[in-house]
Length: 213
Image (cartoon, rainbow, N blue to C red):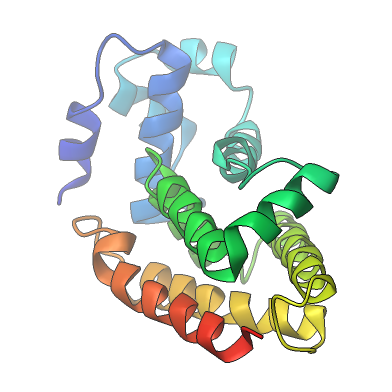
């Protein structure tokens, strides 16, 4: 799909800052961060370059907002602490993992999320800021799932295995699938879930069968 088609679809009732962000996402996803100038973004939005700078002082400011987007769009899978523990016991391994999968699907389907991850994946190898973001994001995901699997083990819901190793094994398939899609097969026309929802569901079910006590 041509770049301008995506840009023309942006609703005029959105704020100028929202329009700038969405146009920048589209251009960065198709041409790379270094291949896009602030002038090009302004022209695509239909505003003067000076007006663009009143919303984002630089391309770096745009990239920082892109970094923040995945965390802002991510919903928690439930309450924290003792309430989360009770919920996990009540739902069981299958129920909890299925809920987590549906939350992930909603998160990756959020507007602009695929373009954010396309940018992250193609810029990861040469931009230290993106590498730092990626390391932090994956580190927090591993910590989150290590805690979940530790709680499951505590209540005898899963076999006696290392929670951290299990968390890494579970997430490794997601990381592989992200890299495969957003680096090798992203074309701006299909969708990540359209290409991968079935195999991610099969992966989750296989894991549950393998670890359930």
